[in-house]
Image (cartoon, rainbow, N blue to C red; front, side):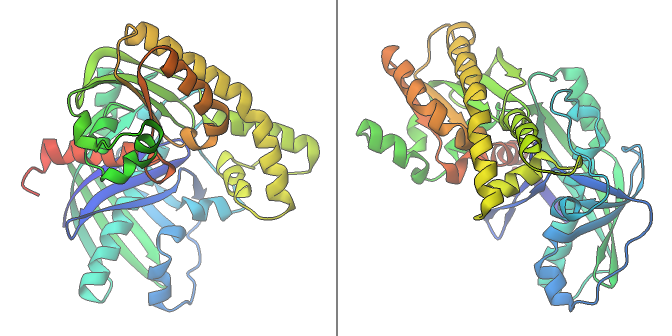
Length: 385
């Protein structure tokens, strides 16, 4: 099986973007893993039920020269539900290019996607599956260098064997990564935007009384603010091409606000030391007392973080962009979390400086990196697709 994919190896989630039947598809899981000292027992659910929930129950054995510890892992949502030790990215330290977690989560999603595609096509599970993979991904500007990018490219460009535990069955997926491009986070966002439908500009057109579509932005000069979990990226882009040297990353984002909110939560109630940022995000969605408490504390934590991000956007406009852009784009998961604290002030800033704000709607905001890296991989490696 041949696959061409883009992978967003975010601190909060790992997202896979690929084409199936000429439609762009996305698969995501929280960026959390949990090492298992022994092989877990299988469940006795019917296979069709297991396959329906495969992504939320990723249990894999991985053998790869690119990771430090081979063995069994819970991945994503399954790891979050596990009562054992959970591992996620330390956002204060970074180091995605040499961490095992991005490799394990990304390859697990690839293997599960390929196995489910084979099952849907053939009506039965394969015993083994060989996958030739071409891919693109990105690391934060704050840790990006050609050397670090090459380290991660070389780690992916190996042969990796993953056994997925699928109910009572085991499926061996051999993944050979033949092509891999690692770029800076935020640099592919304009590729995602230009390949979006016109709905992505509904809010913009309503605010400014215009009728623009993405293709109208193909030759403009833009500053992109990609607000993530552990880092936020600021990139100047001409048309679809990032301007060399005009990008930076800062350790600002949702994860830092979440860490503060978790500290505040511990002062209110008793929670485990193993409580993760991803679990905090799940609590924020709950319609109960814990959800109300989490939202209240998160609101306290977001204001200061939003002010720091606003300052970095203003500095990037002045210093990176030399106060010369047509539009500022804001996207990433943080554009949702910090919208109430950030959008109005940023709108005033753009009006005072005579340019416009493109605030990417929630429906598109969190997928800009995965979609952008997919279109990069397609452009570089998969032009015939």
